[in-house]
Image (cartoon, rainbow, N blue to C red; front, side, top):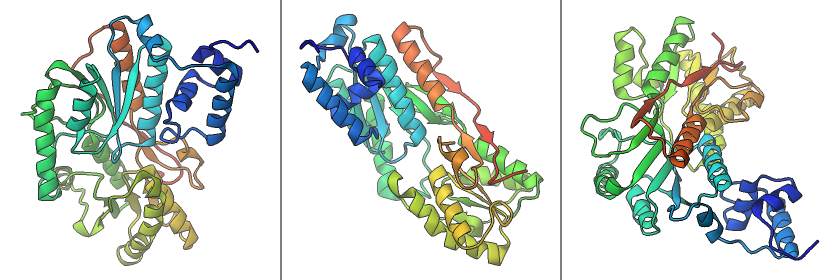
Length: 354
């Protein structure tokens, strides 16, 4: 093959890959975005063969004067859907020739990431991962609560000359919010109230929920409608990295089995599909049937949810749709409303039937 520089698109076509995958392989972030090692090796060998030299200036030549877009993702509150949505944003920006910078962050330290990106001339940022501004001081340790509040205050100042888009925002927003940002997301309390009401009417009670599913305020609202989630049915969840959530679910099976025996629990509602998958595995291994002995509900509707040993009933988020909307707005220059609150969808499958 002729020894000349190849464009990412030509390389992608030659290797039967997407241009985004090729770009990720060459960026050194392949492991973070779960690109297979053999794919990375194949790309590297090919670019060495054709003498390809990645040119970061190429994108800016298509959009002279256009600053890069910041894509930031939470290390501790992002889901598979967030990861897929960010890759979609990368693909759309790459295809349009718009430069972007990817950075992760920890909750309570978003402002540090924004400072770094502003120093790289970023003036538009898309945030991936569950985002909320309301924190319950009773449930959050005092030092962590203060850190969150300090981070929000600092952000308010930093974002005065930055467009900040949150594509997985947890409504409602505080009445006295300091942040002037674009909020696209759902009201998690509302969808859980809808789910729990449907389960209650179908007789799938008593119901156990993990502590991350529903707020104290929402439980009070449910109790006012005659639907009570007793404190002893609230499952305590440990802070666990995404990669270990299957193990959390398996370990949770012991506690759930205890509730089945002592309290005749009929349904378990969890905030994460992987934890739900682990729980189903643990229950089946101990001789319990899902959903006959106990129903299980997850959250996020990950791609594999329909292929679990017992297909998982879960809640679908519009993160991908919100991401496409934001990127199209940035590329076209068309203004978005500052608030777009969508309704999440309950996906009913075999693990919890009405």
